[in-house]
Image (cartoon, rainbow, N blue to C red; front, side, top):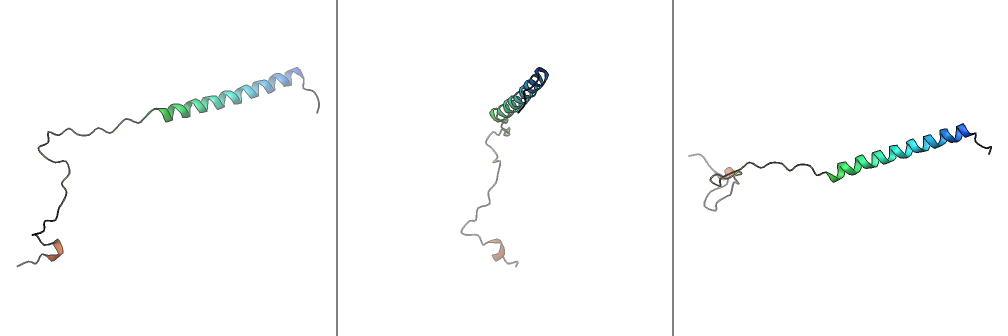
Length: 71
């Protein structure tokens, strides 16, 4: 292979430095995105008097919906 001129060496050095700078910038951006946790969703405040979710529970003395017959 032939020897590089000083201008070619300078251009090659510049290209390598730009590539390294891009890789470091991308790595820094990825690490900041993965380190920063997303803010937690705010839960509505309750005083405990009314439940937030009502769960339908079948009582043994009641028929299921499909077992109910109209009079």
